[in-house]
Image (cartoon, rainbow, N blue to C red; front, side, top):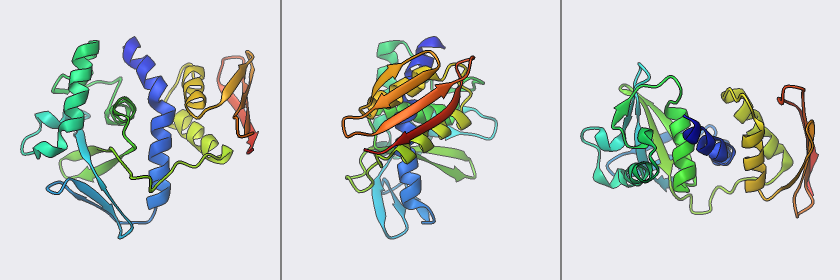
Length: 218
């Protein structure tokens, strides 16, 4: 799926950054999803509106929320918009009601959906019927993403640890550019600079895999 692959790589870093910021801010807090009210609460600190993307069952089959029974209509807007986007761009995985694929699952669809929809974050809830994937369209500015080199390095580590990227450079390039960095690219070493003064050095091995990352904050 070359077109979907390109879109996925474009959104991988930014979407994981949004998720990681949420995970760090809510670590140790009880997560409570209220489908009827259309919101999620993390302890007594945060409450956010949600949209239901879909469900991945124990066999790995994915079903979009608009194809699930008894889902409140208010939770279907984001998935419905993605369905329209898929039809406009010929991306059938975004509008086929249910499918099973070895190439793309709930995690990848959440990354794509978060990026395409411009949502502030996403999260997963484990239920008796499988994994439910949600978008948080708006965090209300309450959980900003850290801009430190350490945070960016953590996001890059998650990218490479969680997904088998045969060629990581397009995903790394897209993520650094989305964070406002300018990149000086050599074949085996990149230098990324931010207008605030932050600097990141990335070294690659002969096969194009990331071998080392280092940097300093501005």
